[in-house]
Image 1 (cartoon, rainbow, N blue to C red):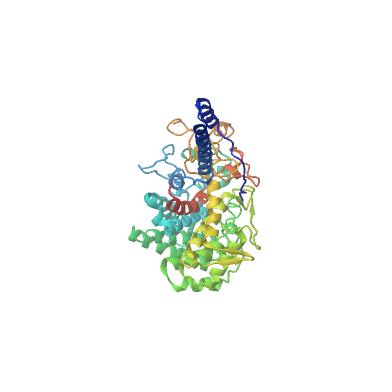
Image 2: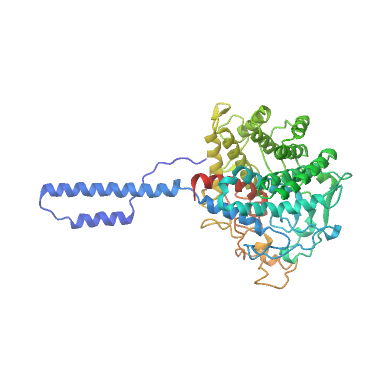
Length: 520
């Protein structure tokens, strides 16, 4: 948390020069006039001093350009696209890639997003990304303004892929394309990929309730986004969501168990699958108002306490989604507030650490993913309780809507550069931002500048280079600083320098709120 520091503000050189000039040019023998001139000099001094305070206050108290950050946070997803790129592609250093994805299983699995700085399509985090992008639009669509079309396009790019994963083979849900181990031993552009594009799926005999529940949530949430904009597409998404959710409920198990070591250590289902069943049911209930899904959640008895929200653990998000649907669900409201109490500094039940600079600190690896997800929940719960002026207590701490919004805003501001390093953790935003991010496509020459193939091992010369990345992945938010607010702009430090779709997705909603509230 920031501490207020009272300090004297030294007079600027230009102010000293002006006062010296006044002193030199005053030549007056009349005593009264001299006194008047002295008074004028003092008033001018006070005016200049106050002006200095005012200008410095703007620098400290001014807000980042949230509208610009919002536009860039959405643009980032174009840099993660797999498949055949559209004519309106704005990140132009990217080209077509993964055009035969799915062929190993005789299906079409082209499209979707690469999860982070590699060239693998992991269905679990991609589905979470889709759910959070959709929730951002559902919650703040009226605030997104001119970026609404771009946000819908980002959602549709993922939803189209998830539809392919869900609907092409009865009894199967495709959950990944690309051999993670082989991919991570190469440093090559997605356009040059020659590693195995192995296809992975879950089925009745190899269940994956976690990835299926998340995929159902993503499809259901996306169906709400397109309910008015494209009713036919919305119905298609919802039908697929129902089918995938039924599969998740009927054939229970962790997908990382079913698929052996393929998804671990990359995206293991550490929290199990009960949270995804709750999450999927919450979004199906929100999309359909079908009491079946509400009753199902009650049968789960999912009362797990949590202080985190991420692609793996959805308990906090699911409870918040239910509260938004109907404020009469006292159980979910209580659980949502218990979560907030575990996050808020000053709360007697807080289990969340903060850096000296005020950043929420949950994990040493890719910490900003937790910051953006939790901040989103803080903003949305603040929005929910604001109209009724509802308050709750965390021990002796009285919590209001403004309490939650203030903390969430400080987290976003930190990401955008209001931190001890004065460094924006969003690429392309502000004067100072990471230049050596852990991202294959960004660090290697584009196809336009280097049409020839760059092989698996040949690309490591760019990985090892101390030079800035050759292509700017605009809007990418990296993993972030360490517990001491320190950040080394090091491509090799993937835990802090690698961007990911699930870092950006919840940030879109928070930035939409802030842009509408504070302007640009």
